[in-house]
Image 1: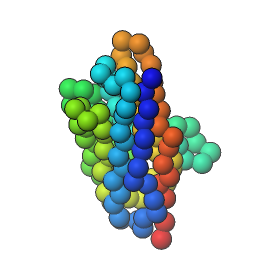
Image 2: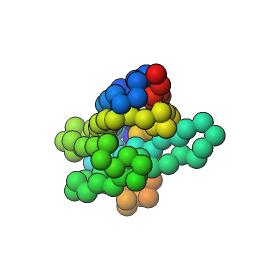
Image 3: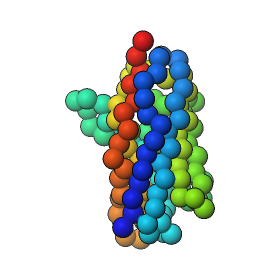
Image 4: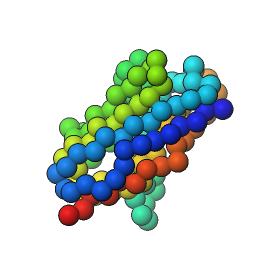
Length: 117
């Protein structure tokens, strides 16, 4: 079993920044990819950014150049630095961990990000 605990969400004005963090615990030795999805009201959950154990990253087009994902494999943590936030970034952000061999996803509980003036 793997547990993921997120932190760092909140309310920010347009153009502001937030930093989301996610810490994994439990059977973390075989985590392949970690990252973040988000779900806005009335929309499907969508990938924001991901990073593999080797450091390869992937970003949704809508956040490229504004968001940066990083990972500490030793601590099993993943961080999402969000800059130049826009109202359309408002959503619940979910951390995930993916185990390639078992083809399993584990999810955090979600953290609310609201971008509003």
